[in-house]
Image (cartoon, rainbow, N blue to C red; front, side):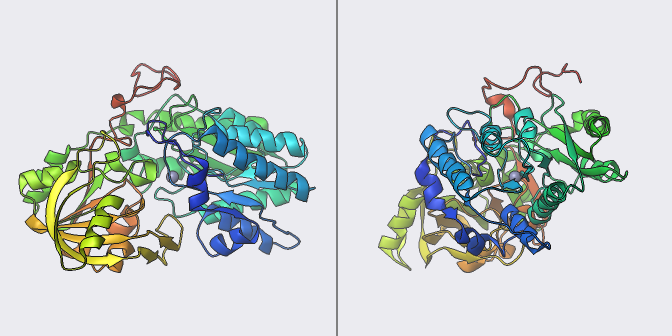
Amino acid sequence: MAHETNTFARHLTDYDDFAESGILRGDQIVRDYAESHATMAGFLDAGRLSGVDVIPLLFTFTDPKGTITRDAFERICVEMLQLLRDQGPWDGVLLAQHGAAVSEDYPDMDGEVAARVRALIGPNVPIGMAPDMHANLSARMIDNVDVTVVYRTNPHLDPRPRALECADLIVRTVRGEIRPVQALEMPPVVINIVKQFTGEEPMRGIVTDIEAVIQPAGMLSASVAEGYPYADVAEMGMAFLAISDGDAIAAREAARWMARRAWDKRADFTADTPSADEALAAALAAPRGPVVLMDVGDNIGGGSPADSTVLLEAAKRLGVRSYLQTLRDPDAVSTCIVAGIGATVSLEVGGKTDDLHGRPVAVTGTVRRISNGEIEELTHIYGCFQIFDGRLTVVLEATDDHTLVLTTRLIGKTSIQLMYSVGVRPETKHVVVAKGVVSPRPAYEPIAAQVVLVNTPGVTTSDLSRFTYRRRRRPLYPFEQDAEY
Ligand SMILES: [Zn+2]
């Protein structure tokens, strides 16, 4: 039951959200995931190891949004446990939790799932988990799981091999070949979302440390979780984990070594990013485009509504032309479809979900294209899914040389195919807005003259001082500059 929960987002994540995204059982999981690059694909790959049968039970994932309702958690978790009970006994269990889920009753929902599974199957059946790199790992998760292997790339290009690594360690544990011992270190530190790209420092060096840690014989695996700062929970922050074959002290020392080295770089974990006006002014002056602006405050992958108009409003005010962005606005999509292709419409777009992401902006334009929003992405990049149903999508060629791709669903961050599928070529634009921070990079870096992270307001803003945290640890760097480790 995979979810990245933004506890600052106003709308709760309910059962219907999971149901609409798909609550998959048995072979449905194979159908949708076996050929993907997702965690579940790596778990299914374990079925290719000799003598191993993998039985998929239940999997559901829905886009990041607000806290998960009690009803959604209990219905799905109870069904999951029922399947586990009815179809057992098992030699091992694999959990495809994201690691940053929060429900109304359980701030550490993934820890609760792990604890319930452990209670059901008993202490002797090994459990593996392969969380997202944005997981807020907790002691409760780790205590109830034997093997935890976190992705090592952000943007996430390696969920499948990491999940297979996790499954393989569980298989070897079942066969008595290894005895994994995990150690978790949670230094009191948060790395800002704008510094989480593993292709650059400081994360590149921190991930490289994993390679050093796993060199000695007897070290089975090591991981770094960057954490997810938009979940207000006690375990929010970075975590370092090492797994040794039977040597608790070695695991502890390895985790501490990684954590200490990262802690020493903490001054590099925050950055000043330009405001919308500053970024657009710089883009105007740029000799060539596309200048790809990352709308950090409206990061679809982080739980935002995808309808922020902050950059659009500034672009109109500053006279930025050759400008392209997406907005999730089902009402505007309907209006355009009713008007029909070729019609000129005047309407308000975006800024409708709440008052945190700008106001609706009045635009006039020509309806250029209407699409059913089906996108096929054959590379790794699109969040590890291959086919995505974006539902009704419209291209509006607005005045000021602004191209708006209006969508029905939360889409439009990581696959450039969204643009191509509706006849828009971002390469030809001077300014392109991507609603994300890191995940759009693989799609947009190949065509971008430059990529600029923008400090826009919203539920995923990089300015964490805008949020009121109630459950996080104190002290925690950088909120408390004098935090010690
Ligand atoms: Zn992630």
